[in-house]
Image 1 (spheres, rainbow, N blue to C red):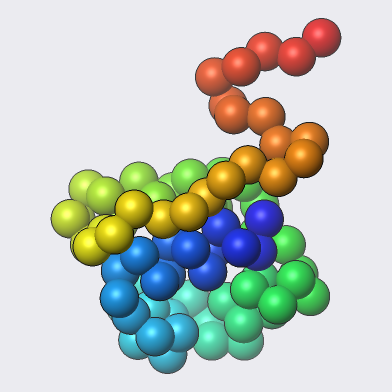
Image 2 (cartoon, rainbow, N blue to C red):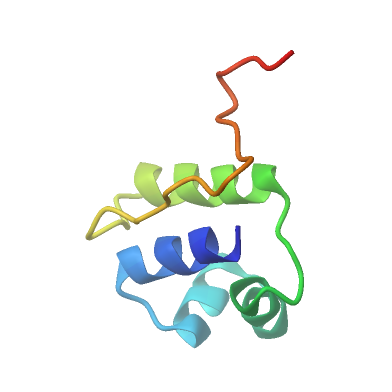
Length: 78
């Protein structure tokens, strides 16, 4: 999951400091997410991606390949 945050940030062309300032997220929080020390809730990742796309901030498509066990929100599991 932490790679998704990094992929989204890198897709904007921003470094971590600028991304944190723009999104108003503490630097340490994003750093911990990217390093895997903490995990961002899935809804945060979806909201970040939605906002970045809505604001046309994404310059390159993020490589957000689902990790093993990830289920897209539109798929149902039993």
